Length: 343
Image 1 (cartoon, rainbow, N blue to C red):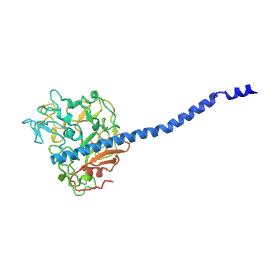
Image 2: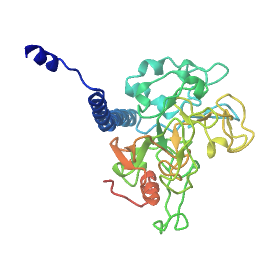
Image 3: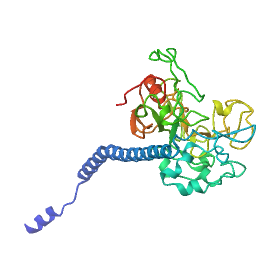
Image 4: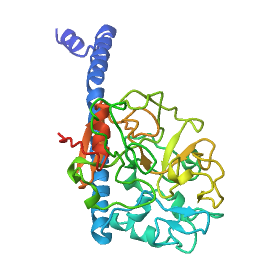
């Protein structure tokens, strides 16, 4: 009897029992995996919000020190090779992001720039390809330097308002809400720098920065939000934001013969890109003619349904990618006269 008992107690799993256990484990993994992925994305979004907050503080500290926000970028006038905005001939084609480096614990990188030379010329300076993790969102698809033409990229861009040109009056033909016209230029409209007093709609109600992906969007129509799809993760399609070089595109920066390209040559055709071929480098700015996740000139984010923004007072706000376009245009204009209370 004892031998029978020992044999029964030492019996292993049958094949059927083993398969049942494996199936149960598979179901549990299937249930847990979305929760794990959701937790990871929540951590990435939190990190992105922290980066946004750091950039907002850097903008506020820059304004405190200079009594104005940085310009979208410096251009080089073709007639005499001087900087626009005026003030320093040594800052040709620096971006706004370059200027705030000392205010985000990157003074060493800023100080290493050779102010006697253009930031991008015959020999690009080291900062052109230097990675700074604080200007990248961990949810964005990363790109190598080979995939960004040896430019360091950023996932945070400054709002130029409705368009690249210096004024952007809109009316009911653009959106039924705009019954009284209004100037929808942004905080970082090209060729000059703004101050807090220029933000007539209120700093807490005006967007300064928003996320941009390393891919860009396509297929979304102008004056829409959430209507596009991400471009392919290939060099042929990628549209990315260069971190520290103001490459320029369209608008005042690219009128024929008016300004030099970052490479030092006179631009002979209006609204042409530099350096031209794919993958496409673009200055760290966006326009609000395209809402979140619609097309590459506008902002976009890999966060599900939400895009992080920084207001002109430094506060970080998560905004729905499906926000009404008319409201989107309002919160990007600094003096349009339409004030929207952010939730």
